[in-house]
Amino acid sequence: MEDKMQALTVDDVIQGLSGITGSSVSKVTPHDFPGTGRGMKCLTDVKKDDLLLAIPFDSCWTETTARACPELVPVVEKCDLSADQLMQLHLLVEKSKGKKSGMHTHIATLPETFDNCDYWTEEERKELKGSRWLHFLKAEEGQIREDYAALEAALKKEGLSR
Image (cartoon, rainbow, N blue to C red):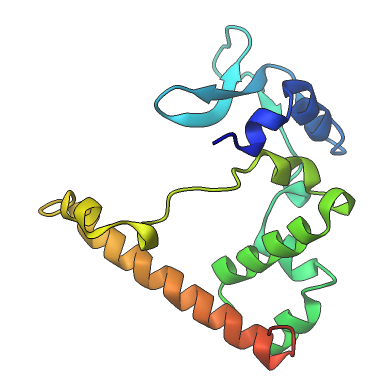
């Protein structure tokens, strides 16, 4: 399945990053690495302390930017959400804005689908038996359910959910 990373050109991503005031993209480019996935690769040899990419902190996905999102202010003021839950909501709000979002270029680079342990079969889970990853999977599974329940309750409380 083709994901959104394939639909954007390198120029699209670089233009999006370059459009952020104070950002600098000079020695890296987005790249899909076989076996490990997407990331940034260097375009030239680099030396210790070379600046590869600079993005102003206030243009990043942070709890502070999520709390400042106008659509989330009423929820933030009335609901006790964790930083993770708040970030999840912020991503959904920005994604719903489409091209009107200041984060559109970044959102467009995110995969539309991804693997999630909640959807693993029993057979797939058995492969982790005896490893520390089985414990991690169970903890992650519980966290996903807790986050969903907390978000759903907060949105219902504000009349923002079905």
